[in-house]
Length: 271
Image 1 (cartoon, rainbow, N blue to C red):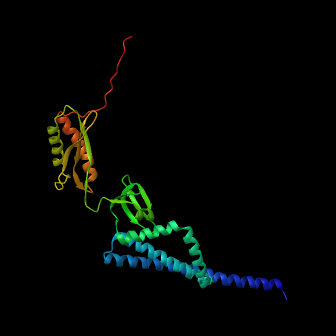
Image 2 (image 1 turned 45 degrees about the vertical axis):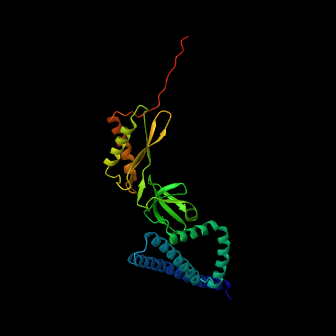
Image 3 (image 1 turned 30 degrees about the vertical axis):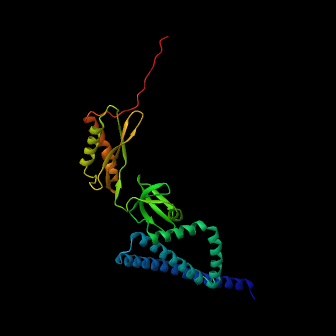
């Protein structure tokens, strides 16, 4: 008996057996990935037809994709000869251990679910949360992405977002623009208020309702400060902010009203 031939045949048989399993697993993975992509697209079209909220669409599609991928992984492992029942038990035990280790991630997942249920924000909203200001771009399973005003991508964990304070500037549709301008103490208050109010009422993007206001807010060390409060739509906020600032300077100069600035007094002692 030739032991060398027996070993060779055994290795060839094992190689052929496992090779076919691996090949089958690869084919299943490729086909399964394609099927998942198609199913997600079908789900997306169904949600769009049913007019689902864009934020909810993103969240549900991500969730569906992850669930299908986990099922595909289990099927592939079964094709390779891994006992799926044992694998399920191992997965459950591992899930408990991973769950304890990743409590923060589970909290973020729960936070994402809460955001979808109560809908304090949606895609396109301008919000301020966790010390950041930006427009909501995506609400994913674990995180929410914002686009900052300087075009930065801001990623906030859903757990922190759902448990913290959220200021939504888009919900009401309008915003008050808070500006303060100071004039010299020699300036006539009534005339200054008229000049400032004319600037507000002349700007095309300042809303008439709510009406803009101009009031003396402070008698400071070197100036009389006026609280100037126009209203605008959320989209026009920065146009009004910068536009009014520039127009006020020009209007005050034209009216001969001084805007005070720091002065230095140099005292020389004669020796």
